[in-house]
Picture (cartoon, rainbow, N blue to C red):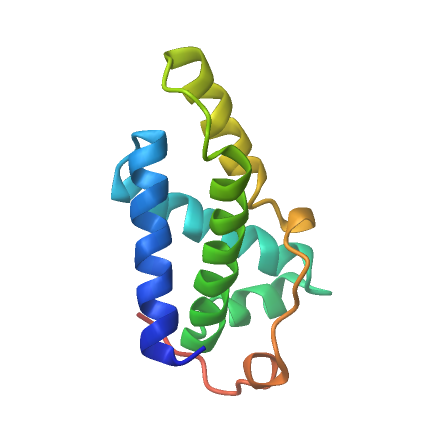
Length: 121
């Protein structure tokens, strides 16, 4: 998938999640960040490596794509759910669980792992 197609895919999926769960973009991106850090920490052999990964623009581009894939699976799993408050609480919990490190069955490609320069935002 080309870079612009991947970006559009992520934006489309994000919009659907925001509408389905009734959450803000800020809440959404807080989970993108928190789960990205948790994934790096769970899949690194030391805390320093996790810190280096999470300061890499390549890592975050890769992670945002993995996050969108998990969102897509979540949306397809619950697309016919109703809209009552109890169900929304359940869906929000399930959405957060879908992004736990052990649920992401992917690993960054070599280009991400071999990043030597640390980019600070």
